[in-house]
Amino acid sequence: FVSCLRLKQRMQREMNRGPDEFVGPDGKRETSSIERARAASVLVLDDVGKEQVTEWWEGEFTELVNHRLTERKPTIYTTNYGLIDLANRIGAYLVDRIIQACGDGEHVYLVKGRNRRTSRLAAASVRGGE
Image 1 (cartoon, one colour):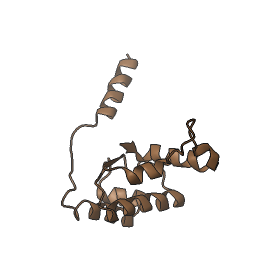
Image 2: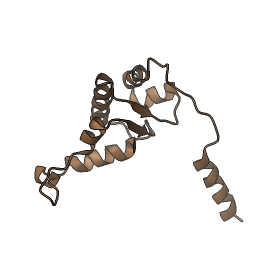
Image 3: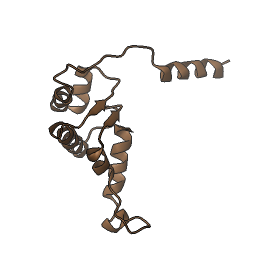
């Protein structure tokens, strides 16, 4: 389980590390975040589309989605965006690949309900304003 924002941040930090920094205290090579995401038997990518999409991130995320699709590795994608809004944020090609990975849409589920985060925020601001 990893949020897309956190995965992107970790990958950016890792890009700035030298190759020697991927060796742990026991002398074994540590795997990078993208390697762990690619290799996971089941991966949950949370909050897809929340991260700022750059050309670099679009390429990295596309490669991850494509890898998991071609290797037939189960991946769960969560987002607070509808498909059109998500396509506007991450690109139509990526949304199409995600839908394809979800059995051509057969396993795309819309979950409705109140947003607990914004509900808590609203309640806290009302209490704070008293």
